[in-house]
Length: 180
Picture 1 (cartoon, helix red, strand yellow):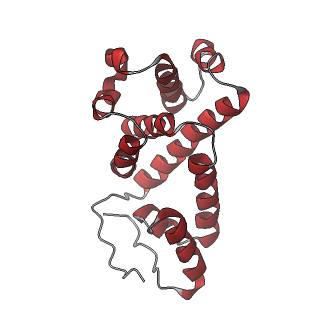
Picture 2 (tube, rainbow, N blue to C red):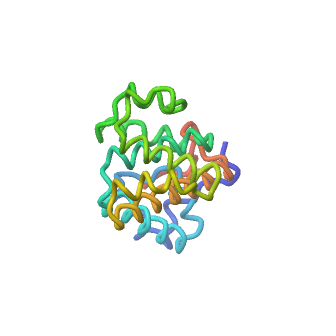
């Protein structure tokens, strides 16, 4: 159960933002229902995540491997619940998803690029400081723009999982506010 009640989506003050979220995301998921307590933060979050998810040159499969790995490391089930179906649509296999908790033991399932991205994700998420060897594996396989976008994706989804877990936002929460 979430630590705060979800925002009232019928509040006229957030009507336009609710409409925008529905248009861009298909629905107002629990994450945005919580963020809407602060319309400015919700707007900024939406814009930022749109850039990361939809305007980056990082391929969908790599993006979703990052998101799923961050969710596993940070014990963020809501994030994993939301992104597992997206990962499969983006070309991540069920076998890869099943192996992600111990991906280092299943390197046959992941390309060299995927392994480099997963190692980078692990270092950024667990240790913050990235060892030179881990960074070099990324820098030799991707151009500067993609390195920045990979780094921003990992950082962003660490932010997402920390927000979700601090406020106990989970997929099975019931929102008692009727959705317009």
